[in-house]
Image (cartoon, rainbow, N blue to C red; front, side, top):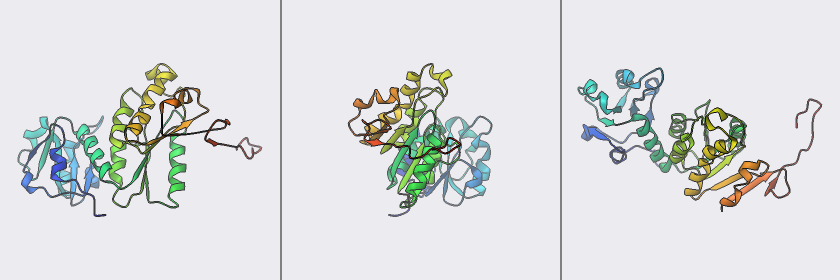
Length: 268
């Protein structure tokens, strides 16, 4: 499999994109939003965050080797003299997500999506460690599990990646719907439903409504969901899914856990 690249056609497919100097564009194998990580052959996407605006670092990105830049259309006049391909869009964050989905489909990798009120990071680490014994695995690092972090992790994968383990976090309705649309998992797990961020979701049923979007997009991708049979809210919905595996400590689970030992400190 050859090196993965973002083509000119990919850029033209970004909703709202207008491309300036397209004849100067050659397919690029790196996409970055941090100017410090830009190297020769990079597409730099300028994203405005809570504290910093990537548009303020475009000159640094170009010095470091950026070959094309994606900017918000309302910033176009500021960069009109740059002699590089410029992709102007309505929203660079959405363009970043769109291209991450394009990249995801270029990968020859299975995607595992994980969310839940508790234990998602531990589950991610356990899965990545076990799978790394046999496969080339890329996983979510730190807390990169939101609308910026999920695309960032996808772009960390390359043509050698065989398994991509993605953690999906949320603290408001619609966030997992957005990130799961980008990642389109082959496999998905919701660890449990608890009171984490319940101030935004009001009830545990509200928490599940948000997190279950990971299952929704996995099913749309003809994937398999893994159901915690011991969680009353998740298990109540298990008959909604055709391709599923259940797990837990109950006899009715497809995969039943057994506590082999408990230490004096109460650890299993």
